[in-house]
Image (cartoon, rainbow over all chains, first blue to last red; front, side, top):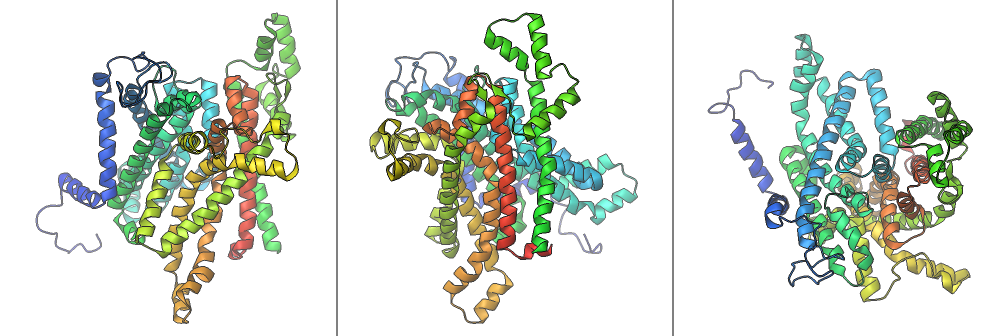
Length: 296
Length: 325
């Protein structure tokens, strides 16, 4: 970039495909991340084929209540005779969907706030960061409980509640990126050329800030799934949708007689969240190679 | 000393608008919720004539313009008047204060366990960098970071209460036993083990990772090279130089995490029947007691503000360089 006379390496600039391949090689060097990706692929596959494997509603009665696991039913049945494994399969859809959508909402909102604050600075920055600070001070899980309780439990209210408590961290991250990119030459050049602000933010700065956003976003999905499971454990889940947290909450009262009802859905949450965290860290290593030396 | 005082004052002044904003958010949520206090009261009474409803609204000031209502609400909250719980027929603040003690016991114990063992594990991992010890600790941290708290709690109950019978499954003390003095303290401590361990796990993971990273960062600093050049032993460098500096971010984190600790304690108190604020919040959910839930939310937000302030002040003692800024 600094030396214009420098000869380019053989051939054209690496294409999109080549860059992806390079990224994959960097990612695949991290064995833990590959392990996480494999688990995650399994969970996604389970979610995808759940309606085929268990066409009946996961709330429908499958057999004798509290049948032990590894018999007629892989993971046994619950207090009402619902198949625990069917619940886990359908719960995977709920968890992944809520985790993804809530994170997407939080990322869009947090990025907008952070981008505006970092790009414009001044009083806009002051105001937006003050708002962010307020939302960071509020105890997030209690706030999420309150929001869902007020809006009454449903998929939408859970997504909104999770997004509301998750965006501040991302806004801070994006603001930092924008602050440092704002004064770089390529941005200043576009300002001089008279490019409109929205175009500079979206086309020039945002692509350069994308890697940390992707990494933070992937880790936020894991947190979102944990929050969702906590909410539905407390009985604040959507009553029409099966979810892992609800299964654990429902089996809690019979823990003494039927340990499996709580155990397997909880283990599903653990595996999924762990897998997403591992993938997120792998992405971090692959996308931000400069940081890797510090960790070695 | 004046520098420190000025800093503390500045922090207090900075906290006031945040507190105000939280109270306003709370007010807006109250307005957003279906039905107002008059509806709730009328619902409790069974039925009410429109005249009686209007009278009630006038009594609560609900017929006033919204900005005036807001001003009155802020005034009430700052006097710690969080409204009335119709379900318990008690002022919300009395209910909350009665449950604050158990929650504080649980939270303080948790912080001590989590920070204590987190620092120790992080230290062990950083001093044995890339050995099996480091890897094992990192894997443990990763797994406990991903585990839902309620599930850990239930699994601990299955293993240690139901199968081994070492600890009670729920509650804070054996009420029927009428223990007094040290017997009572011992009884509560016995009940405290499982909830505190459960709540600690997540934060333990956090502090372990933070401590490890912080130790590694400090180990690369110039003063460590100087210490080594002076001929100090590695042990002395680690404990007298690196450790002390590496602890600073952990202290900050302990303050920041109080906010999520409160959320975690709702879950853990529900699982273990610990009679604190978290369980009160859970009960208020089922009783549809919104006033109470909002009161708990407000008080926990205030608690976070106070703890953050305390950490800032503590920080000026731990790191005198702060004052210069």
